[in-house]
Length: 205
Image (tube, rainbow, N blue to C red; front, top):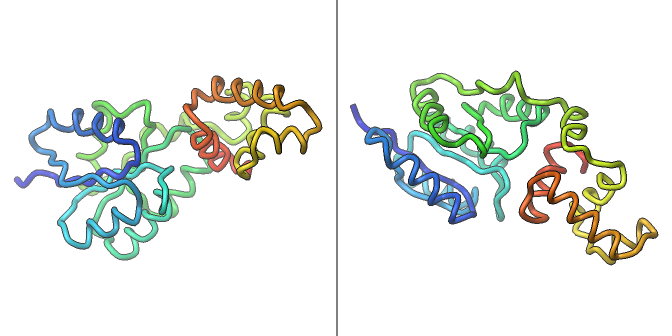
């Protein structure tokens, strides 16, 4: 039986190296390539035989959702697994409607990832955790975000600086920076890009 050929798409080198390490323990899986965005993924599959593409959602140039749409249209034989940070039910409904074959949380990409790859490569889907995914309102409650913090998240997603947000909300810039710090802590996010991904998944923008 031929090994399953994989393409990993993520713009974070550390994440990619971590995934490669996890997958290297299985001789039936071969990482044929790694790319940094959706456009590179589409270019790669045009010249290489790939069985499964593992896509991060938040990538520059072309995000994972847009890439998945193109893959399903132009390369329907390729299976797709989406990685996401947030267990949000509306997001799952969207990717299922696109025909994506599987989805798992970035926090659960150890043995679960290899299991998911094997299942989708065999023609099945992998949404084992879908029943535990939260509704929009439950997600906001889960992270204990205040109404003011949600306002700040929306402005961050619009690309406003702390100074601009302070002007919009008629509060001090120091207060905005405090809100931003608290938001990062509550969401366990590393930067504004991950906060924006949360805002998109929650349909806050």
